[in-house]
Image 1 (cartoon, rainbow, N blue to C red):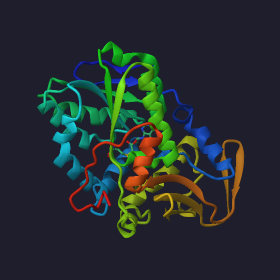
Image 2 (image 1 turned 90 degrees about the vertical axis):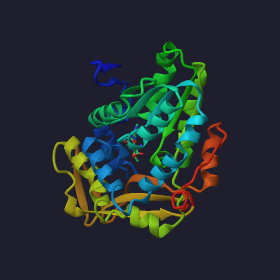
Image 3 (image 1 turned 135 degrees about the vertical axis):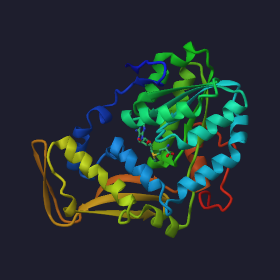
Amino acid sequence: MGSISTDCDVPVLLDIRKSAELLNLRSFVISGLTAERKTLPSLLLWDDQGLKNFNEWTMSADYYPRARELEIIDTHKHEMAQDLPEKFAMIELGCGNLYKTASILTALAQKGREVHYHALDVSAEALSNSLNGLKAHLSGHPTIRVSGIIGTYEDCVDWLTNSAALDRLGLSHVNFLWVGNTVANLEQSEASALLGKFRQGCKTVGLTCSFLISADCCSNKDRVINAYNPNHEPARTFMLHPLHHANMLLGHEAFRLQDWDCTLEYDTTENEILFWYSPKVEITLEVGQKHIHLPEATKVLFWRSGKWTPTQVERVASDAGFNAGRLWQDELGEYGK
Ligand SMILES: C[S@@+](CC[C@H](N)C(=O)[O-])C[C@H]1O[C@@H](n2cnc3c(N)ncnc32)[C@H](O)[C@@H]1O
């Protein structure tokens, strides 16, 4: 664990990576393909190129969540800021391009809040670029200190619990910012378990904590499918990137793109969309020393995006020991209903 950048003109980046899934992604590719229920790790989506693909997709007209979320933040950022203490740490989980963050931090600065903001993501280059932009944006706001943390959510729990970093800054409250409906890239039970770990980690080191979370509760199936359709660009480039990434890790073209379909399935019980790859023909994959035989149409799960109902969101929070607090929605109810 250590700082990889300390030049005072650029934000400090702390490298806390420890989790095996991130450090040894290749072996998770292999174990996921050899398991009975075939999977590829969703972390394959999120290298530097993957984040560029994601940003392009979210700018497309069909991708309603970005515009709706920006609308909610822009309309309610002062109320969000009002609810937070005079001085605290903010840790943004899976921060991505920080576009929404700039708006929230500016509102906090205008209220004179002292915020020690830490952006967490798994992709070092993307994190560094995004932070430089954010720092420039906030240059007139000295009460907001900006830094970055490279690692996974699990690494962050571990760092919080064991490093006493926030204690040294004299902070007693942490707000976790988790936007982009990223919480719903987990199964509901996984999301509750992770929220609970953050709560417990904070408690262990004597910190209080709160979450500012965005969840897309859109129940209009057509709108969702239109936004996430893996057969339409630019979503397609984003969705197929894990196959390129896996080839890179495996050191050869194990996945030939023309042999694979990418499909979306809407699970109306859990209210989530699941993304699968399946071979168009019977296929034998060469991965590591193994040959993995996959019959035509074998389903390989690689990603999910929940469109949870407000009741499901509340259950995720309460199962983690949190009370759902204030709720903000967009005016048309596209994101929220
Ligand atoms: C859906 S994107 C959201 C990005 C950004 N928050 C936004 O609203 O546009 C998910 C983000 O979470 C990051 N991410 C995914 N899995 C992660 C993990 N296990 N630990 C930390 N970050 C993760 C990705 O790199 C990506 O930036």
